[in-house]
Image 1: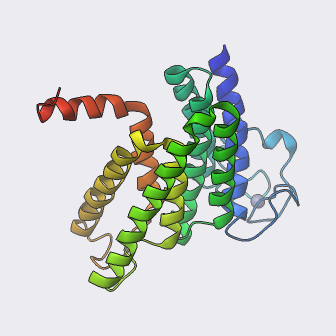
Image 2: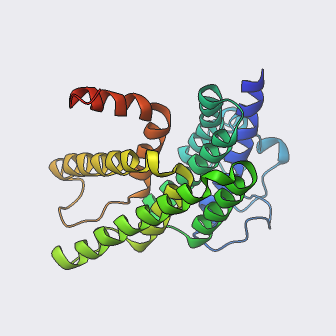
Length: 255
Ligand SMILES: [Zn+2]
Protein backbone atom coordinates (compact mmCIF):
# COMPACT_ATOMS: atom_id res chain seq x y z
CA UNK A 1 0.00 0.00 0.00
CA UNK A 2 2.80 2.41 0.98
CA UNK A 3 4.61 1.26 -2.17
CA UNK A 4 1.70 2.39 -4.34
CA UNK A 5 1.56 5.76 -2.58
CA UNK A 6 5.32 6.27 -3.09
CA UNK A 7 4.94 5.30 -6.75
CA UNK A 8 2.14 7.84 -7.29
CA UNK A 9 4.05 10.65 -5.51
CA UNK A 10 7.18 9.77 -7.48
CA UNK A 11 5.29 9.85 -10.78
CA UNK A 12 3.84 13.28 -9.89
CA UNK A 13 7.39 14.51 -9.27
CA UNK A 14 8.30 12.89 -12.60
CA UNK A 15 5.66 14.99 -14.31
CA UNK A 16 7.36 18.10 -12.89
CA UNK A 17 10.77 16.74 -13.92
CA UNK A 18 9.48 16.67 -17.51
CA UNK A 19 8.73 20.37 -17.20
CA UNK A 20 12.26 20.96 -15.85
CA UNK A 21 13.84 18.88 -18.63
CA UNK A 22 12.01 20.86 -21.30
CA UNK A 23 12.05 24.37 -19.83
CA UNK A 24 15.30 24.76 -17.90
CA UNK A 25 17.69 24.49 -20.91
CA UNK A 26 15.35 26.78 -22.87
CA UNK A 27 15.39 29.28 -19.99
CA UNK A 28 11.58 29.28 -19.61
CA UNK A 29 10.05 29.80 -16.13
CA UNK A 30 9.32 26.45 -14.45
CA UNK A 31 5.99 27.63 -13.00
CA UNK A 32 4.37 29.94 -15.57
CA UNK A 33 2.68 29.64 -17.98
CA UNK A 34 1.05 26.29 -17.36
CA UNK A 35 1.85 23.35 -19.62
CA UNK A 36 1.06 23.63 -23.30
CA UNK A 37 1.75 21.48 -26.34
CA UNK A 38 5.18 22.48 -27.75
CA UNK A 39 3.78 21.93 -31.27
CA UNK A 40 0.38 23.68 -31.38
CA UNK A 41 0.73 25.79 -28.21
CA UNK A 42 -2.73 24.85 -26.83
CA UNK A 43 -2.90 24.59 -23.03
CA UNK A 44 -3.10 21.03 -21.74
CA UNK A 45 -6.30 20.11 -19.85
CA UNK A 46 -5.80 19.25 -16.19
CA UNK A 47 -7.23 15.76 -16.78
CA UNK A 48 -4.73 15.29 -19.65
CA UNK A 49 -1.90 16.06 -17.24
CA UNK A 50 -2.14 12.94 -15.08
CA UNK A 51 1.29 11.26 -14.92
CA UNK A 52 1.66 8.01 -16.93
CA UNK A 53 -2.14 7.58 -17.34
CA UNK A 54 -2.62 10.53 -19.69
CA UNK A 55 0.21 9.51 -21.99
CA UNK A 56 -1.36 6.07 -22.35
CA UNK A 57 -4.97 7.26 -22.69
CA UNK A 58 -3.99 9.82 -25.35
CA UNK A 59 -1.95 7.18 -27.18
CA UNK A 60 1.14 9.37 -26.84
CA UNK A 61 -0.37 12.17 -28.94
CA UNK A 62 -1.52 15.75 -28.35
CA UNK A 63 -5.32 15.89 -28.00
CA UNK A 64 -5.57 18.87 -30.35
CA UNK A 65 -2.97 18.54 -33.10
CA UNK A 66 -1.97 14.88 -32.87
CA UNK A 67 1.68 15.81 -32.27
CA UNK A 68 3.58 12.74 -31.12
CA UNK A 69 4.59 13.35 -27.49
CA UNK A 70 8.21 12.16 -27.04
CA UNK A 71 8.47 8.82 -25.27
CA UNK A 72 10.80 10.57 -22.82
CA UNK A 73 7.75 12.06 -21.02
CA UNK A 74 6.30 8.65 -20.27
CA UNK A 75 9.71 7.20 -19.42
CA UNK A 76 10.61 9.94 -16.89
CA UNK A 77 7.23 9.66 -15.13
CA UNK A 78 7.42 5.88 -14.94
CA UNK A 79 11.04 5.76 -13.73
CA UNK A 80 10.38 8.53 -11.18
CA UNK A 81 7.61 6.36 -9.77
CA UNK A 82 9.57 3.10 -9.74
CA UNK A 83 12.94 4.27 -8.35
CA UNK A 84 11.72 5.58 -4.96
CA UNK A 85 9.77 2.32 -4.50
CA UNK A 86 12.98 0.33 -5.08
CA UNK A 87 14.84 2.50 -2.55
CA UNK A 88 11.99 2.15 -0.08
CA UNK A 89 12.11 -1.65 -0.38
CA UNK A 90 15.90 -1.65 0.01
CA UNK A 91 16.45 1.00 2.69
CA UNK A 92 13.04 1.60 4.31
CA UNK A 93 11.92 5.09 5.32
CA UNK A 94 15.14 6.84 6.29
CA UNK A 95 17.61 9.51 5.27
CA UNK A 96 19.10 7.26 2.58
CA UNK A 97 15.69 6.80 0.97
CA UNK A 98 15.24 10.56 0.75
CA UNK A 99 18.81 11.32 -0.42
CA UNK A 100 18.96 8.59 -3.06
CA UNK A 101 15.47 9.22 -4.44
CA UNK A 102 16.24 12.92 -4.94
CA UNK A 103 19.69 12.13 -6.35
CA UNK A 104 18.20 9.68 -8.87
CA UNK A 105 15.61 12.19 -10.04
CA UNK A 106 18.28 14.88 -10.46
CA UNK A 107 20.51 12.50 -12.42
CA UNK A 108 17.53 11.44 -14.55
CA UNK A 109 16.78 15.04 -15.56
CA UNK A 110 20.43 15.95 -16.15
CA UNK A 111 20.90 12.80 -18.27
CA UNK A 112 18.20 13.86 -20.71
CA UNK A 113 19.38 17.48 -20.80
CA UNK A 114 22.99 16.33 -21.29
CA UNK A 115 21.96 13.95 -24.09
CA UNK A 116 20.16 16.77 -25.90
CA UNK A 117 22.36 19.82 -25.17
CA UNK A 118 25.70 18.38 -23.98
CA UNK A 119 25.55 20.54 -20.89
CA UNK A 120 24.52 20.36 -17.26
CA UNK A 121 22.57 23.37 -15.96
CA UNK A 122 24.09 25.00 -12.86
CA UNK A 123 20.74 25.54 -11.08
CA UNK A 124 20.16 21.77 -10.89
CA UNK A 125 23.61 21.11 -9.39
CA UNK A 126 23.24 23.96 -6.89
CA UNK A 127 19.74 22.79 -5.94
CA UNK A 128 21.00 19.22 -5.45
CA UNK A 129 24.05 20.25 -3.43
CA UNK A 130 22.06 22.47 -1.06
CA UNK A 131 19.24 19.93 -0.67
CA UNK A 132 21.67 17.13 0.22
CA UNK A 133 23.50 19.36 2.71
CA UNK A 134 20.21 20.30 4.34
CA UNK A 135 18.97 16.70 4.57
CA UNK A 136 22.29 15.45 6.01
CA UNK A 137 22.47 18.29 8.57
CA UNK A 138 18.85 17.67 9.64
CA UNK A 139 18.89 13.87 9.80
CA UNK A 140 22.47 12.79 10.43
CA UNK A 141 25.00 15.61 10.99
CA UNK A 142 27.69 12.99 11.72
CA UNK A 143 27.73 12.18 8.01
CA UNK A 144 28.43 15.77 7.01
CA UNK A 145 32.26 15.58 7.04
CA UNK A 146 32.21 12.31 5.08
CA UNK A 147 29.87 13.84 2.50
CA UNK A 148 31.93 17.00 2.13
CA UNK A 149 35.21 15.08 1.72
CA UNK A 150 33.53 12.72 -0.75
CA UNK A 151 32.20 15.66 -2.77
CA UNK A 152 35.64 17.29 -2.83
CA UNK A 153 37.38 14.04 -3.82
CA UNK A 154 34.83 13.45 -6.60
CA UNK A 155 35.18 16.99 -7.93
CA UNK A 156 38.97 16.89 -7.66
CA UNK A 157 39.30 13.56 -9.53
CA UNK A 158 37.02 14.81 -12.32
CA UNK A 159 38.92 18.09 -12.49
CA UNK A 160 42.22 16.23 -12.88
CA UNK A 161 40.66 14.11 -15.63
CA UNK A 162 39.30 17.18 -17.32
CA UNK A 163 42.70 18.92 -17.28
CA UNK A 164 44.49 15.72 -18.35
CA UNK A 165 42.07 15.39 -21.26
CA UNK A 166 42.82 18.94 -22.34
CA UNK A 167 46.61 18.46 -22.13
CA UNK A 168 46.90 14.90 -23.50
CA UNK A 169 44.08 14.72 -26.05
CA UNK A 170 43.77 18.45 -26.74
CA UNK A 171 40.00 18.25 -26.23
CA UNK A 172 37.34 18.42 -23.52
CA UNK A 173 37.05 14.75 -22.57
CA UNK A 174 35.31 15.77 -19.35
CA UNK A 175 33.31 19.00 -19.24
CA UNK A 176 33.20 21.33 -16.26
CA UNK A 177 29.50 20.52 -15.83
CA UNK A 178 30.49 16.88 -15.30
CA UNK A 179 32.95 17.96 -12.60
CA UNK A 180 30.22 19.81 -10.69
CA UNK A 181 27.60 17.06 -11.15
CA UNK A 182 30.01 14.37 -9.93
CA UNK A 183 30.97 16.49 -6.89
CA UNK A 184 27.26 16.84 -6.06
CA UNK A 185 26.79 13.07 -6.43
CA UNK A 186 29.83 12.44 -4.20
CA UNK A 187 28.36 14.66 -1.49
CA UNK A 188 25.18 12.58 -1.50
CA UNK A 189 26.86 9.15 -1.65
CA UNK A 190 29.67 9.49 0.87
CA UNK A 191 33.18 8.10 0.45
CA UNK A 192 32.32 4.42 0.90
CA UNK A 193 30.23 4.31 -2.30
CA UNK A 194 32.00 6.99 -4.32
CA UNK A 195 34.91 5.02 -5.75
CA UNK A 196 32.75 2.12 -6.93
CA UNK A 197 30.33 4.61 -8.48
CA UNK A 198 33.11 6.40 -10.38
CA UNK A 199 34.61 3.10 -11.51
CA UNK A 200 31.25 1.81 -12.81
CA UNK A 201 30.39 5.12 -14.49
CA UNK A 202 33.69 5.27 -16.37
CA UNK A 203 33.55 1.56 -17.16
CA UNK A 204 30.07 1.98 -18.70
CA UNK A 205 31.09 5.16 -20.48
CA UNK A 206 34.20 3.55 -22.01
CA UNK A 207 32.43 0.27 -22.86
CA UNK A 208 29.44 1.89 -24.54
CA UNK A 209 31.73 4.48 -26.16
CA UNK A 210 33.79 1.70 -27.79
CA UNK A 211 30.64 -0.09 -28.99
CA UNK A 212 29.25 3.14 -30.48
CA UNK A 213 32.56 3.84 -32.26
CA UNK A 214 32.61 0.29 -33.66
CA UNK A 215 29.01 0.74 -34.87
CA UNK A 216 30.13 4.06 -36.39
CA UNK A 217 27.45 5.90 -34.40
CA UNK A 218 30.03 8.31 -32.98
CA UNK A 219 33.47 9.41 -34.13
CA UNK A 220 36.53 8.53 -32.07
CA UNK A 221 37.20 12.21 -31.30
CA UNK A 222 33.57 12.91 -30.33
CA UNK A 223 32.61 13.57 -26.71
CA UNK A 224 29.83 11.51 -25.14
CA UNK A 225 27.53 13.03 -22.51
CA UNK A 226 28.68 11.76 -19.10
CA UNK A 227 25.50 12.29 -17.04
CA UNK A 228 23.65 9.16 -18.33
CA UNK A 229 26.65 6.99 -17.38
CA UNK A 230 26.98 8.65 -13.98
CA UNK A 231 23.25 8.08 -13.44
CA UNK A 232 23.54 4.38 -14.37
CA UNK A 233 26.72 3.86 -12.32
CA UNK A 234 25.13 5.55 -9.31
CA UNK A 235 21.95 3.52 -9.52
CA UNK A 236 23.86 0.23 -9.77
CA UNK A 237 26.06 1.28 -6.82
CA UNK A 238 23.08 2.18 -4.65
CA UNK A 239 21.25 -1.08 -5.35
CA UNK A 240 24.03 -3.68 -5.71
CA UNK A 241 27.11 -1.86 -4.35
CA UNK A 242 27.62 -4.17 -1.36
CA UNK A 243 27.29 -7.34 -3.46
CA UNK A 244 29.70 -6.01 -6.13
CA UNK A 245 32.30 -5.04 -3.52
CA UNK A 246 32.10 -8.36 -1.67
CA UNK A 247 32.30 -10.23 -5.02
CA UNK A 248 35.41 -8.23 -5.89
CA UNK A 249 37.02 -8.81 -2.48
CA UNK A 250 36.42 -12.57 -2.82
CA UNK A 251 37.88 -12.46 -6.32
CA UNK A 252 41.15 -10.93 -5.15
CA UNK A 253 41.22 -13.20 -2.09
CA UNK A 254 40.65 -10.54 0.58
CA UNK A 255 37.44 -12.06 1.92
ZN1 LIG B 1 -0.60 20.00 -29.96
